[in-house]
Image (cartoon, rainbow, N blue to C red):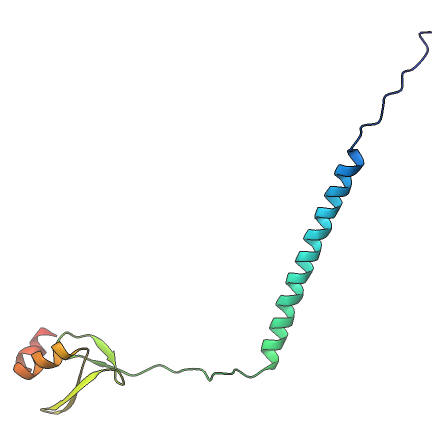
Length: 108
């Protein structure tokens, strides 16, 4: 009776683990394909259209004669004075310039 071989029971759940692995691989592949599709369709759509907003060019800045800060001319506080229009970053700088226009040039 020593020649009898004992049969081992198959490992249960082995097929379930393998199926789960393939399902995860499939889902990852679907997500990757979807991301690639969105990327390339957006790339082609963007290349085919004209830009909605025209490209903005640089804004000319002016220098505050009191503190030396560069300010956008359209947002600056201005004052007419000796030599034309002067632009300032704030009311405080404009007031300081009006008190002493020569000294403010030395501070900048």
